[in-house]
Image 1: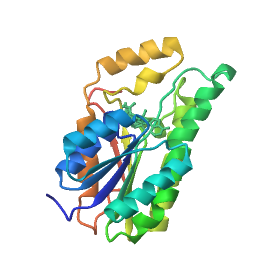
Image 2: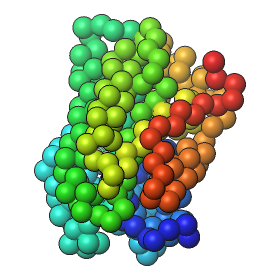
Image 3: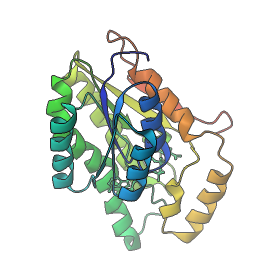
Length: 241
Ligand code: NDP
């Protein structure tokens, strides 16, 4: 174990990077709180991990469900030390009026969801002796391209907000931005624009970086000694342009 055990809340812990991060932080000796809408998945993961794992069904677009989760974390575990804002959707496709629902969903989950979860857990994290907030952004938070406009807007938004939050919360709470390239997960499965879905699925089928790789990076970043803050990590598959 690398440090004093802490309580880590992970949004979107039912699959991909969130699930892998929960596994990695649990293996490092921390307690993990798994938040997601697919209750069956997070309950199965909590049961598999055993002690120090709590599954709470929560939707990041519903502030009441996050507030209920925060109350349980406070009463059952004494409060959160770490918040990983990971829940996200990537509904890529050309910008068009037909895709208003996709556009709004990405903003509501990726950007407002992270902001709301942070509002709700802020008091717990700032009262911790060792608080960390991790925002999962993307290469798309730095580079926009045709077909990813609103997704990129959500991640650019996360990047800007994270830097401001970092300055406001120092020195007690560290804020870390993680910007992965292509990682093999279920992320493209929800794309509604069929041509884009096919193209992105092909790219993801050959992805070499795993959720476990990203989880290892996150765990490294937040388990450094408290005088050191790793604020931003951009990581890509070695062959990604
Ligand atoms: P997954 O689709 O495997 O995971 C997405 C997670 O988000 C799921 O656990 C899902 O849980 C959760 N989620 C979606 N909507 C909501 C909601 N309304 N409330 C709560 N949870 C929600 O994909 P990844 O692991 O790849 O994605 C995780 C993060 O990583 C995202 O923010 C994504 O943008 C980012 N990322 C991923 C990259 C990649 O290539 N895979 C690259 C760069 C960034 P459930 O459906 O059960 O609610």
